[in-house]
Amino acid sequence: MPIQFDIDPPVARLAAATAEFVREVVIPAERECGGSVHDAPETLRETLQKGAREAGVFAPHVPARWGGHGLDLRGQAVVFEAAGYSLLGPLALNCAAPDEGNMHLLEKVATEEQKDRFLRPLAAGEVRSCFAMTEPAPGAGADPRSLRTTATRVPGGWRIDGRKWFISGAHGAGFAIVMARTSGSPGAPGGATMFLVDADTPGMRVVRDIETLDEGLFAGHSELAFEECVVGEDRVLGAVDRGFENAQVRLGPARMTHCMRWLGAARRAQDVALERAGSRTAFGSVLGDLGMVQQMLADSEIDIEASRALILRTAWELDTGSAAAPQLTSVSKTFVAEAVNRVVDRAVQICGALGISAADAPLARLLREVRPFRIYDGPSETHRFAIARRAVKPYRQPRPEAAADS
Image 1 (cartoon, rainbow, N blue to C red):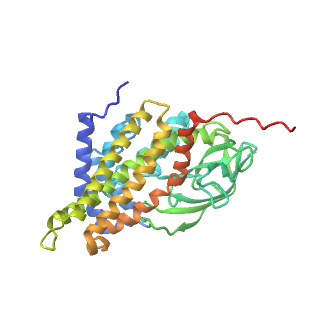
Image 2: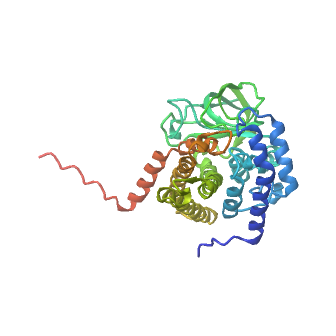
Image 3: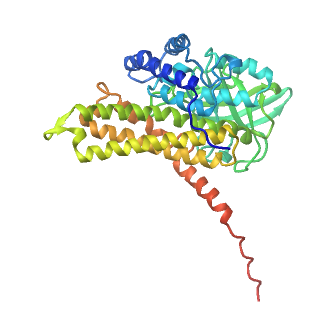
């Protein structure tokens, strides 16, 4: 099957409408709040999403059944990049993490009753959600097999006990998708199960909100405690002991949608750098005529185009269910995360003092926001480990038997 990178006209129109909405409505709102929305009121989200509905760009990823445009990943790549041009663009379109990934997971794994109870209001923007897997050391982090939160059978359901941290969007979320160990011990490759837990369930509480380098994710990141938190049998998401497998339904596409959104941020940084390079005079010419500045601008163009090509290729592999998708997802996540950081850093350097002034240009905010991307959704080192392991697998020779003692 040939790889198709053509943009369908309806997708192109939706992307153009998104770009206009972001430029006319979202960026002014971003400037007003300084890009920091960890503590922003829900009214900001509600106002932006109301505007997105009126502009006809709300929920591009959600199937039409739930009120969205139903784009596949290739279509999402184009629209999400346009949304990511502003830090608040994905929030306005209701395609920000973690909600966007949770919608995809619920659509693929949840029962019809669970979809009606959890997916329907999430897709409509009536509630927010979070995905609770990461734990404080020595619990699950880059290695999810270290999972220590437990879920124990009790009459009528399950009792969840454990600690989670760095849970994005947990503060004020309507519900959490919680990963807990239902069999085995920390380090075992299986034995995890996902549970749907309403935020007001006794035994679930927000311990604290974590101060972080980034401030552009709505409600920030929190630490959660689960202490004798009991949920019914109907709150098991997917099959018992199949949580790690079911999580892959979410993690691969969610890594790519992260890449799509952050590529939009890189494009914005490059646009700021290009405008500065074309207007700022120094040493007898505009910056854009200076060789060292030209090299930085060219390298950023290369990084942006290479990132976009990787995203589209990987989105196609995921859309078609290709066996190559896991490898390309890791390649794309690693490359794009690092390329986005390079583009934003170069833009800061080209703009000089303007680049580090948070009040006069968006670059300082963008630099702060994109740096954690090399850690979120698997650090670059973990993905490189997985990439190399997959690459060498077909060439691995059987280990020779140890010579018998003479």
